[in-house]
Image 1 (cartoon, helix red, strand yellow):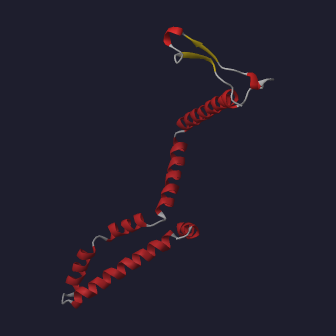
Image 2 (tube, helix red, strand yellow; image 1 turned 120 degrees about the vertical axis):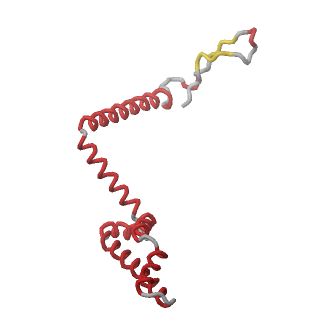
Length: 154
């Protein structure tokens, strides 16, 4: 089922539901005919077919769960619910928007500073002459040195 068919099906939901209803009733009546052919009376065949077929409402719900349109419908229902809820509670909505704005602003500032300080090369006249400076303690050996300045990567 292509994307266009799925979108089209969203707007023809009533027709799809009617088609499903018709198909379920066809199978139920066909099962009833088979029971009558086995020798049951009309009423007994109807009851036996209903018993064998199961609950129609539950079958319809299972078919809707299997249907590929359900996720799109669920997202639309969730969006409608979210808009209604936010409209009912304007103070919460304002607080949420402020929290999002502050969070986005802080992240932008931090990553801008990170990019400017650590990812951009320094504007040094003689960048090839920059060196690392270490302090070592003779009692700890040459591998125990403390980095005082890091190399500049460019």
